[in-house]
Amino acid sequence: MRPRSQPAPDPSWITTSVTMATSVDPAVVQTILRSVRQRVLRINYYRPWSNRYSEHVVEPWHVRLVDGGMYLWGWSRTRNAPRTFGVAFVESC
Image (cartoon, rainbow, N blue to C red):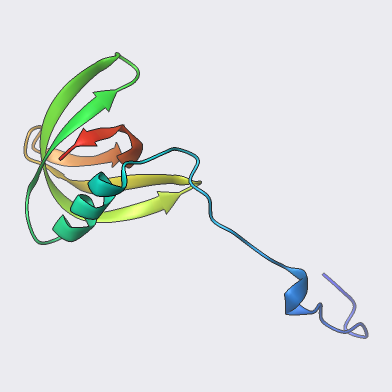
């Protein structure tokens, strides 16, 4: 907020950057992006809260970057429900 009598701030005063809070396998990201709305993926997913792996068959809808983390949103044929997967935990697809 500023009084109308003061000039607007110069846009060069503000800079932004996007960094990933988690590391991801570039090959996994590339495979996921190529599959969005085009084909079904079988992913090997690490579940950190239980320290085990699970396999999911997913119809990917889109990938979102949320608070520095990349997420795969799609329909899980394994669970027969919509699901969100952290891309950093996708070991292979």
